[in-house]
Image (cartoon, rainbow, N blue to C red; front, side, top):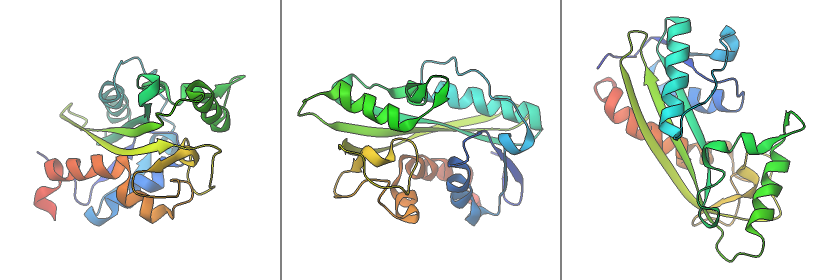
Length: 202
């Protein structure tokens, strides 16, 4: 597999919260990062039925448009008592009157749970790395936790204020970003990607 050390890579996202988190994970490997948003690359319609499928779709789109290796993630919240919802529709659950509002999405999750005793949830992240010639690799990472209510904390994004990871009494949004980055679903997926792609670069 091709080495990425010292290369420039596109993070295939327009989500400003994800870019520094992924850039921090890539920093030890000497990879220069830009994003699809910064390059003016459009966001493709996410038409796949799985996190891996959508991650690969986005990575292929940005690699083709930029001529650079592209890293895409597709991630979301899966709530056990809701049969894995919102799942791949996690971002779409946040759309209200045409605007993305995660306060609305978190309230929706809590409302659907109602008085259920089962608050078990997990964050899932699929990471896809695609080179301009079409070579690809895709992995999945997870972090287990519970849905809490009311939402707490202002340091995270998305569903972080209602997600309390197992073994902690604070939410992801109350946790220092560095601590969250070390244990997140994205970090778990990245560790697996490192084993496949950066093993010879350490």
